[in-house]
Length: 152
Image 1 (cartoon, rainbow, N blue to C red):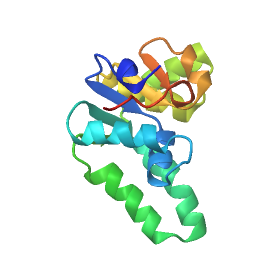
Image 2: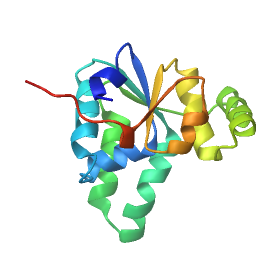
Image 3: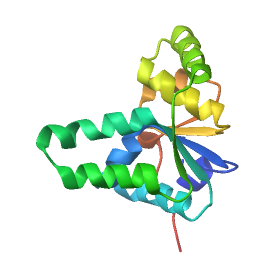
């Protein structure tokens, strides 16, 4: 499936942690695809939504390595990007996450990410976790199953 096909009709796109890592760290397999996603978000073609879980997850390796530049890059993208919101976890999302975890047997961080995307009205969720395809409340877009759209 191409990115154009995957994002057809998507106004609000939930983002898991992996797309941020692939984008900032120029992942050899997925960089072109995630760059296209973040360009679409920046240009307003769709809004990007993630949770503070992403901030926690992306900062671990830079902190372990003492890489202040990389930490700052992640913070800048997550906290200061046009058309991208990093949302808190509230009690409604927490209860929704518990329900998702119980029904689909997914990890709590994933359940929280998806719960925030749902509460923000996202139509799709971009991840690279095949296990999340079990969740049926919104369209799961798995990076390994997609290819960049062909541009003229």
